[in-house]
Length: 66
Image (cartoon, rainbow, N blue to C red):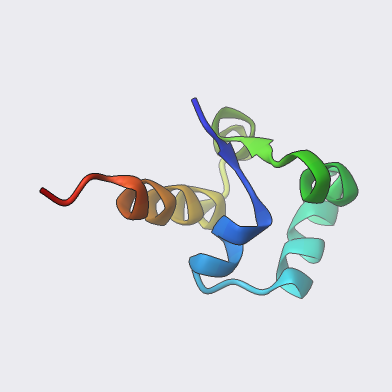
């Protein structure tokens, strides 16, 4: 499974300030995320709909359009 990055969050239309709040709410390390990303599995394990939406949009962007 791939990693979600801050670029994916931005591309999904969410802001960094919102990401900061989201990471705090879920007890996750924002600085580590900014440096290394977060696995899709870890993001989905939060059960949060925003994480699922970022991943859905990431996969949609990465899907080959042939």
